[in-house]
Length: 163
Image (cartoon, rainbow, N blue to C red; front, side):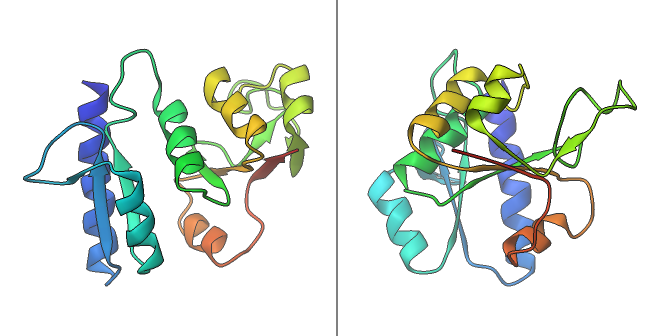
């Protein structure tokens, strides 16, 4: 059911972007040809080369893999520059800022530091995939209006995780 929910969320993102005049393509790990294309790496890359935004839905299409793992996998497959991980908080902290008001935010942190400190950025499979493939992660508050746009404009938002 989670995989289908990601497709529904992806359709909402697609609709919002297209209402802004952005060309998009939605690709799914599960065949749903009436609403999206099947994920084909070469086709995704070609869409990107044409300036389209490609949205990946339905995770990896395999059980036991989270959406974080699917995002890391797809990002590596298309040779993305970075993963943008939208959450409810504005970055990575020394502790959960929703529970611990003394938590301190990191502007940047290495993969090894985050792992060594037991910080849960994303599931370990996804995190390891990013680390081993030198794929940086930016964790940011997806609920703050303008954050995604600021990131896309190159502004420093959230926490950067890199080697």
